[in-house]
Image (cartoon, rainbow, N blue to C red; front, side):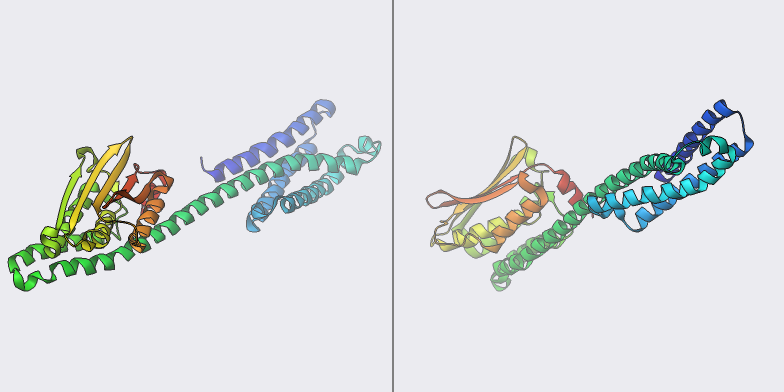
Length: 350
């Protein structure tokens, strides 16, 4: 049943039950009176009308967004005002029916007024509390969606910052092949084409399979070997159970590029770069070890900061990234990635 149907059902049933209960008590004590029945039906219609008008007012002016003291003041004034209307309408009618009894009672008006205010307080408080809680729930949901949208926008910006840097280095890797070895250049261009295609798709995809990311890394390293030849040696090893793990696109390529730029390329005789991936306690652990020393370098600058930020945006505190000096002459970049979090599943939906 929709909220609208529930609302009108409660309105009709609630006011009918209240007013007819009082009518039954009157009938049992004084006997059936047709005019009192008409008066009761009129009160049902009046009660529904007045409380519905209150509902329109609270929704129209967004009372539920007000601070509690200001909201409580408006609720109190509404009870007093609506109670006054019900009293002013009912007192003259009841005087005609129960004139002798009413005339013998002191403070008739205030008794009527207090009774109607009590009934209206129950309805108004119930609806106001419900609307207040519902509004705050919607507000919290909107904040979550806004935060998700902002983080998605941040993720797109960070991904876009990776592409120009990557393209520049990849093109330099095959430049020398164009005249020296055309057949090798064709192979390298195909590898570059594959990498650029994945790079372009990175703006549309939040994550990719690890095996796809490793293929991009392999293509990139093959292109770099064109430049470094025997000065670059690399290996890529992965746990077969990890190949379908979801990782941010182009992230590993950035870390590999960083390892070559700040490590291997600075060594006169070159060096090595090893990429390994394994699963421990439902966490994907990727390590990129390369020749190099952190001391005296900027450790990759913006590229590595982007890596940490992307992981934070997609996985929150469940993921981590660090780069450290593993041994003398060997630098290790370590990424830990959990399974898809609830937050990330929201980001997966475009």
